[in-house]
Image (cartoon, rainbow, N blue to C red; front, side, top):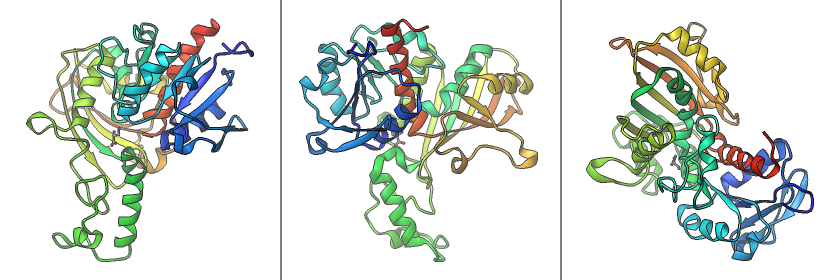
Length: 355
Ligand code: 2RA
């Protein structure tokens, strides 16, 4: 705790895409923090960024940067977290890490505050992890349904925005869109590929006027790393280590907000009415589901908002124990920065004795 009697917070990766959203969130949420220290690579040190209405100078990432810090939020690549998060913890900070570096470590809780907040209290390594943005885009809604119905199986397909691949992903989509806009492309095999050229950025195929059934890197038997993350992380967060999960991850030409179709099978028969009641009242979920008036969530409307939006709630035609849903969540807000901020707030409440 600093002089103000409030916990001191470090934001590591303050200048990145998620860091930028984090500073907005810290400026909008209740001001529970004493000092907020902004940390980034030495190349960004000295820059000034606005948080809570003040300009704060960015300091370079080094061990001493964590002195006096109670909670350190890391929004940086896996390898940076892997090296620096344990160092921050060794200097006394509780680390909340949004990378994949520690998510599956049995001594690191994987936390979504609406689903398993209790897990954040048990942290043998002084580390708490948050899940991948694709898992986060569905797990709040799923956690609410699981608490009532008992989840038994999950089949999901993702429709992932290009900002999941960072600034390079967004730049690639915008560049490709400028090359295909106003043309008749998309009518012959390979015509889009020839127009956008060989540089497809972080994606294996053109993403403008296209969908790409690949996110992440290759794992065993043709699965992608992203698909494995959704499976492993969902199991850990829900406390269902043997849950059957089938995932297909797909990249779509959307800037920000991941969407997923979800087929969720439960222990017993379910009703759509009860599912809708649960979703309509679950914290962090908005039910937007009136197809007769054309109402369902889409990324174009959901982007920039905090909740998980759910629509197209149906009971499976051939299985009365299963539901079909369409969910959307902003991958930079709840999918990254917001979840990290919420975990940090849970930890801060322990320092201040808040309920
Ligand atoms: C993506 N979910 O959308 C990944 C980023 N963690 O590429």
